[in-house]
Length: 232
Ligand SMILES: C[S@@+](CC[C@H](N)C(=O)[O-])C[C@H]1O[C@@H](n2cnc3c(N)ncnc32)[C@H](O)[C@@H]1O
Image (cartoon, rainbow, N blue to C red; front, side, top):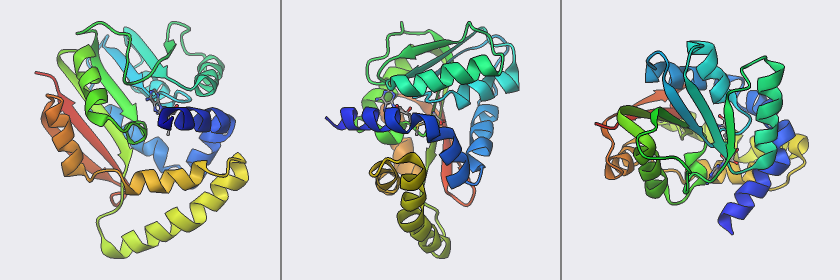
């Protein structure tokens, strides 16, 4: 039920998703993905899985930064988001070898020890059973592999927090509803961010899923956070 709502929501906003991301984040989303991929420090010829790949921006960032990965796979459960990803990858002349897979983060169809890195950007917040999702990512990583999680967060500073919450809860849903024509999607966004655990609590869930050497970095005054964890 919860998953059906999320899937339907992303399917219906898919054509406007990129435009709204850039507008509502004032293009910070591009910088955040870039920071997440450079923090991974991918080896040459790495195999990388991007979960909840949406319209493919993380896949494109991986290829732009490294250019020579052996295997890059994007997985998402919303077919319309994957359709946008396919269109974009073809338009930007990326290799047709990039695999896009319709799949749920909770039931990934990959053998253990497949990937050097797993990434997820703005996806884990939508998955209630985060520990199971993180354990799935852990399983399909090779030993020595890394996980990167990029997620929206609420800023630490009290002054900035009140400004941010005003924008996020009052202005953003109006702009989102106007352009996406989806009345609930951009109401859901602030609620899901506010309810997401703070960085230390999320790191504790990563630890429960067996990740080690967990580090995080706050970006843009704490509006987003990147977590990196290792599989020993
Ligand atoms: C906010 S978008 C992020 C898309 C992309 N990663 C980006 O950086 O823009 C969240 C994506 O997560 C996907 N998603 C949410 N829950 C999922 C799940 N359980 N399994 C697979 N995909 C999921 C949605 O379909 C959507 O495409």
